Amino acid sequence: MRRIDVSMPLFGGMPAFPGDPEFRSDPVSRVDRGDPYSLSRLVLGSHAGTHVDPPRHFLPGGPGADRVDLEALNGPCRVVAVPPGTSLVGPEVVRAVPSGTARILLRTSNSKRWAERLEYFPDYVALSREAAEVVVDRGTRLVGIDALSIESDPTRRFPIHRALLGAGVLILEGLLLSEAPPGSYRLACLPLRLREGDGGPARAVLTAP
Image (cartoon, rainbow, N blue to C red; front, side, top):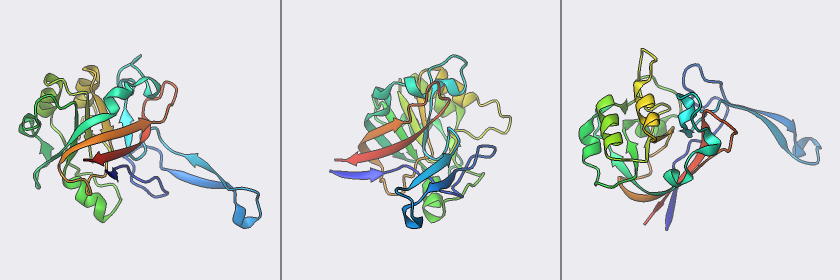
């Protein structure tokens, strides 16, 4: 079996969604300066890098990162190639996914840009509202994308997040999929167990047949 790590590394200066806290790793002790062990203080947002959006992110009283359905985050998945030049993932992309697919990961031109340089860009490819409706109608349990947000909404009302999470569809954002060709895989993804967390930074790995 071949394992492909599709999660974003955490480092100072890494990409962050506008308004989110920047990641920092501050040394507390270091063996190379005579301390008995190395230890760092981490400062990060709950949506740093690759992360899971739990219902609590937008729905008051919804389950947090510590209570998401781990079955939805782990199991067979499909990496779907979105045609180059696409700015919004349309419903036709989701309809082309085999029926019964529980987990869909969208591999857009974002991944190629991440592979060239890990820095934030505002013109990322996002999911359209029509495609989100198809995701919900088909009973998909998880949808992931290679952007720090699954939607681009200048109104900041975030209807796509609300529609997906309100229907029980978990969202996985910040994926790096340039090394994962389209096809079938097994996804392993575990968010940090943050009590009542509104987001969960995660390590996501694909296993190829």
